[in-house]
Amino acid sequence: MLRDEELLLTLLNSAPVIEGVPTDGLDGAAGQDLARSWGGTGSADELARLRRVRQALQTIVRDGDGGAVSELAGILDDAVRTPRVTPDGVIWELQVPEDDRLAAGAVLAWSAVITEFPGRLRACANHECSQFLVDHSRPGTAKWCSMAVCGNRMKARTHARRAKS
Image 1 (cartoon, one colour):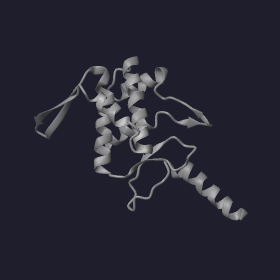
Image 2 (tube, rainbow, N blue to C red):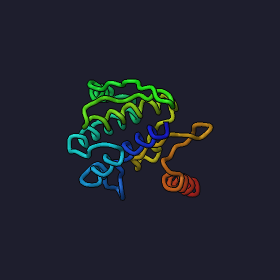
Image 3 (cartoon, rainbow, N blue to C red):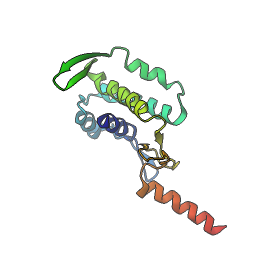
């Protein structure tokens, strides 16, 4: 499960806004390296599919659907999972065209995370931030991608507003 969560958050958070400027971590050599680090090919086709999946997942997490579910379904059209029994249990092998493997894996990771942690995958509550988080807090009330960055900023703003009034 941890690997699924890491893959999902890596993809969702690969388009950060840095100093007010949107960036794309799937561009150029950095994008190729990112894809390869997760077992992908790093090809232009694979990166294009990953961008589509990222956009669809971000839309679903922020807005509920927005028609993005059909985009994800299209990624899995040619995917087949086959069980293989090992001494450590059953392993499900994903059979899919090579350039779709990582995108399909990200869709499956999203499904695993929202099944394991229902309602806990969310966008950062800082509207200036484009990051996502999986809330592992006991009460399920985490709001920010990072308490040190976004949480601190938001709390400081709230404190400043209260101090003014």
